[in-house]
Image (cartoon, rainbow, N blue to C red; front, top):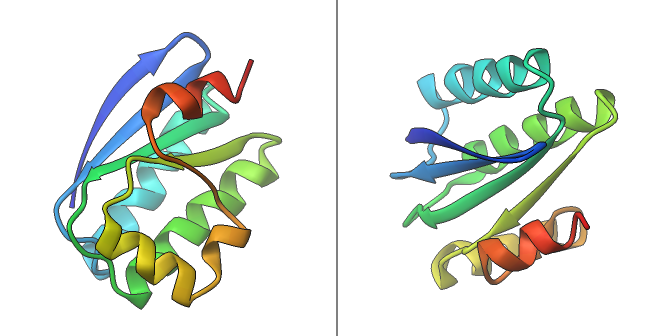
Length: 112
């Protein structure tokens, strides 16, 4: 998994790419979310457009980030999810926890 930042005012868009499979991805993502919170970014949009696959451990990584941002009185929204990954969200019922948007613009607009 790779991450890249794209700040949009007070909101940070975090672009993820590659498979999210756990292991070293967990520590990397946890540190990234902590760094964003420390820098004052408490509202984050995860752009999953570059993520072709996520496993159950990867879902746990996203849930961990979600809870860290909530604890900091922020939020995490997800956009541009590929159909294969979205089906995993539905199977695990995570679409009921995460706010999922078809596009980045729609996710950003939801903060207004």
